[in-house]
Amino acid sequence: MLGDFGMIAPRPGRNVAGIGMTSQRTRARMVERLREQGITEARVLEAMAGVPRHLFVEEAFASRAYEDSALPIGFGQTISQPYVVARMIEILIQKKEPGKVLEIGTGCGYQAAVLASLAAEVYSIERIRGLLERARANLRELRLKNLRLAHGDGAAGLEKAAPFDSIILAAAAPEVPQALLRQLARGGRMILPLRSGAAGAQQLILIERSARGYTETALDPVRFVPLRAGKA
Ligand code: SAH
Image (cartoon, rainbow, N blue to C red):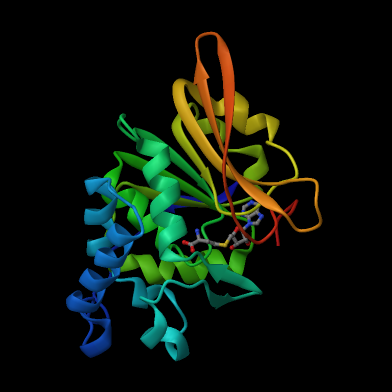
């Protein structure tokens, strides 16, 4: 069973706007770079222009928060690189409404915040309790009322909130978790990094569910932390 299932309580706190290198302008430059890299979806660019990424990385790395790189967030995990976040969400919502979204691998909560800025409803599951608590703290002051976090093994999905119009995995699985296929709504889309044959190789996979079944499309080669079983 999933515990820790609830709303994020608002709390007055740090200055969300930040200063200097962590300002709105730095973020605007990141978005400009995403455009140059080929991201065209306005909803994604707008959401990423609005979420203060520096609040999600460890303080020692705050000055590098807007670089296009993955950074450590503790517990041996990383915050995904901005381009990868943008690209995955862009594919997920292409020519459709994101609707009700499930994210597997909350990590520091950054991608969850981006998703909650553009979708009606977002659920995000993390298996490491300490990280989930950190994400909760990072997210609190953004007051995203449509985002719910849960502690659990994301491979089982979130039965009580299913079906989902969109499912996104931030950790690489050896195969598509069956529970997630079942919890994907008809007309829905799932995007995930899958481990493929060669050692360490991974590829982004898009799965679309229609009335007739599932179709799978292989996309870019990527590098994600592994999807692990059970809670920690
Ligand atoms: N979404 C994050 C990326 C986090 S990295 C961001 O915005 O940058 C991937 C996360 O997936 C890690 O925190 C890891 O602990 C988590 N994870 C791995 N296997 C999992 C599983 N089975 N269920 C839920 N979370 C999992």
